[in-house]
Structures are given as structure tokens and as C-alpha cells.
Image (cartoon, rainbow, N blue to C red; front, side, top):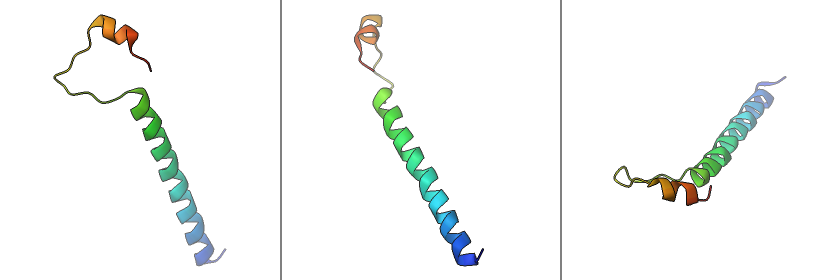
Length: 51
């Protein structure tokens, strides 16, 4: 395998890993939205919150 082909495979794997991380981060952000440390859910708010 030539060096150019190995470089292309390395770049493809890098983009695949970064793409998977981006999709995973997007869905985790959607499922668990970040809140300010000052805001605290009451138990009722936590039960009614959609995930």
C-alpha cells in the first residue's frame, strides 16, 4: 500500500471518528441540556421535563 493510500485511509478514519463524536455530542446535548449552576429543578419539574 502506498503512502498516499495510507494517508487517505488515516484521514477517512479521522473524519469518521470526529463525525461520530459530533453526532453523539449533538444527541447528548439534546437529551441533557446544560443549565446554569444557579438553576435547580424542583422534583416536580424534574418529573415533568421531556427527555
